[in-house]
Length: 439
Image (cartoon, rainbow, N blue to C red; front, side, top):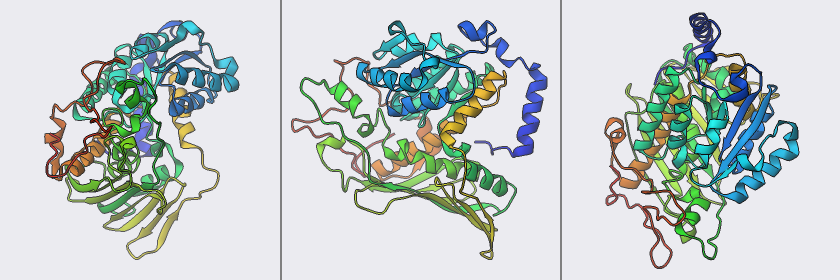
């Protein structure tokens, strides 16, 4: 992964891009409907109407630009209805989603994407590669949540679609919002200018109490049960090292300007052991090795009643840095002298900043964002962390990326069976280090 450009490089890139295309980047992109015909209304489609999808739409509609939500899609009718009601109560003037543009089912995305200029891809992560590929194929700008896949074939699909997005000059923003957060941006500028030298080690954490469980209901097919409880099944979620800890791993990749070349680690189910928790682990501890020899220690767990920790620290040849989602960023030199301490007051909400900057670029006809590459490499860093903890083996990046170990079902339908099925007691097979094969 290329090193993030500094401020001057970014200005130079944008200036050169504007000169190259004469300020008419979007004119060559096949956009549908009103926006393409010359009005300033940007039409958006929401693909995935759960809590995070509703939140993403809320942030998009909260920007200062002229947006209309014109289509919604979800696998479940009740999720779509709830999202529609929530958004309509706040943004009635920006909602134009009659019943005929509310689509339900596994193929709902195919009906919603053509109607918009920009699509918000916010389903469970297992569907992201398929949806991203389709959005790019149809020439749409994209906001997609992290992570962007759950297995190696999905990552390859995202990387291929990212190359097509570049050719079409489609803006793509990925919801790794720390990259849009003031304290991280300010600290990274200083680090890239050499404030702490070359990164030699680091520690990244997401230790918390876990998430929701939705009990099995009568007459529920296995497909519906797993879809409702998507967090606990790897074909949908990727395990919490991928779905949640990806944020902290992303900072490790950003600060090193690279991705790990190998990883080893350990993990287990120590607290969440019942059948309600599908197949995923509740703790992972990994050591990521980078090409320059840097070692980043990664820890994530879901234990209730224990100390929470969500932050990152890194050590360089000239100093160290502490970062957190709570707007903290402190840099010390090699002698322990504090050389930067970010003001935690009044910082913008990074979830909102992602959308503000994306829609500003689109409204101005600028090609400015291509987050899909680092979104994919960061996601795959988490995936190989899972491969390492499940197998107990050292996992090498190149070998893992070439694997054909798709987790997806053979077909998407409510009467279809996922690859992973429960036994007679309702328990799912659990990965066993030393026995489980991941590649």
